Image 1 (cartoon, one colour):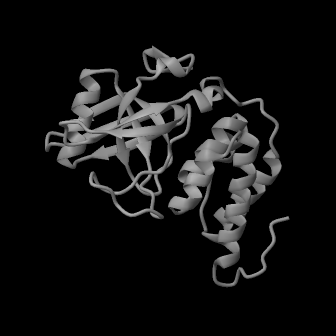
Image 2 (cartoon, helix red, strand yellow; image 1 turned 180 degrees about the vertical axis):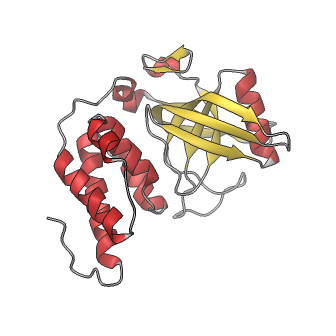
Length: 223
């Protein structure tokens, strides 16, 4: 796959040690784009270091089921590496960044480093399939769109349906998974889904449960 000016073809193309950005309920997936507003000094330093190097950072969620460690909140075991493909300086010390997802990674260990930001030794070997597009993978696209429509209707929201129908399966499902208003556990389940079909099924199930929990939605079915 290509992210910006760099091509990534296999797990060995990712750095072995990357800076990580722990952010609850934030989900990055391969080939998707995530906008970031960077303002904390430690993460401004992280962006400076990434721009001076390989431009790769890892998005990862804090693990809310484990006690904090000496370096801060414990981290989930799986995150997603992304490349900075666009950035701008605001003039008041912030960065506006676009991160393009490359591949998921498993954390081997967190490394001690003399930086303000945290760094991890990672491997993308378990997710070697992320380096190739999954847009042709068979998924129940109709169920995904039906569930998405029900969610929008329940919240009086609109969508650009022409773009929705034009999107590939991978683009559609990953975009919906990233924008879904779920918590850390649900986002991690979507991230760790072994394939696109499972991610789509998980997305539908989570959205149905969310709708059923809403006032007046008890027992609601989208089928």
